[in-house]
Image (tube, rainbow, N blue to C red; front, side):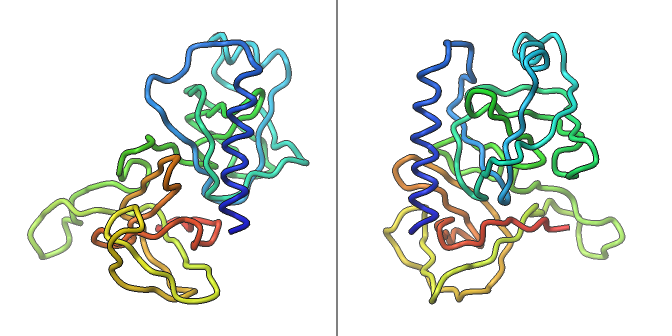
Length: 217
C-alpha cells in the first residue's frame, strides 16, 4: 500500500508543480512516463535548459540529481517530449545516449533509458514489446510473434489474484510471490492505476510487482 500511495502523491505533486510554471506547448495526447527501476531525475544548467526548450540544441551532457529519488513503476504525467541525444557521462549507462527526453516537472527530466511512456486509458504494447518474424533458421513456418522487452516479478506476502481486464472485476487465477513473467501489455488510468498483462489477458496491478522491470534479452 505504501508504494501505491507514494505513486499517487507523486502524480498529485507533479500536477501542482505544472500549475506554477508558465504555459507552453504540450503533447496533444495524454501520456505518462513510468520509470522501469528506482532512479533519479536529471537536471540541466540554465543555458542547456533554455536551448533545449527553445529547440536550438538537441545534445547535452547531464548527470542525475544526487539527492533525488524516483521510485520504479511510479507514474509521472508527461508535459513535454524532446527528441535528440542526451549523454550522461560514464557514471550510469542508463543516462547515456538517450533518444527521448521527458519533462515531468520544472527542470525534472527522465529519458527513455530510464522510463517508458504510454498513453493513458488505453491498453497498449507500446514500449513493452514488438511483433517480429521468427528466426529464419527455425524450421517452423514463418509468422509474426510477440517479443516482450521486460520481465516482472511478483512481490507480495502471499498469492496475488490475476484479473481478466485491468479492473477488479473477473478473477482468473492466482500467482505466487517470486514468480516471474514476461509483459504482454500495459494499461494506466488515473482511476485504476498501473496494470500489466502477463499472459493472455491476465492482468496484475503494478502494486504487487517488484520495482524493477528486468530486460528480456
